Image (cartoon, rainbow, N blue to C red):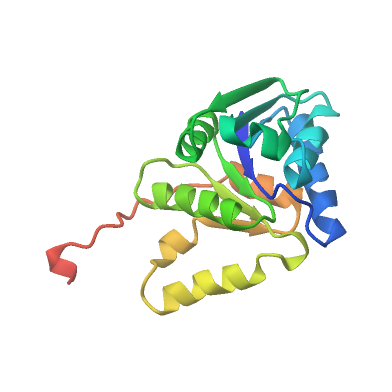
Length: 193
């Protein structure tokens, strides 16, 4: 993997472990010579993962919609900052630039970005690994809900297994490096109805 996109909050949240893990992920990406692609802001967990990468001489590409440049406060020390017109263009660009995705703790935006990448993978639009860094159990309920989707017959287990989860940066990166995308098609045929 040459580049990983990280989705995360533009605030720190209430758990100091989130900030620690964001910085650690940034540090590790730089040490492994993996470029960071992220939302382009210098605030919250977004700024923390970028600064963690930069402090270890790593490369960081930010992708920021113009209308958020003042609200999320664009990071001025990035390797490259790409300004785009819309949130959709931002996600598309981040996908185009990366070889894998990691979600750190975040809110609606983080979840929306994560699930869009999962949907694209499920549809076969990419074969990239998608990981969740489950800092201090932040995503426990979401992970449980994914399992419920399988038991209720609305998500195939092979697609559930696309979500790589760990509470440890090194372990998550290791899982991502050995990931094999599912070959099962999402589509239901008349024969399976």
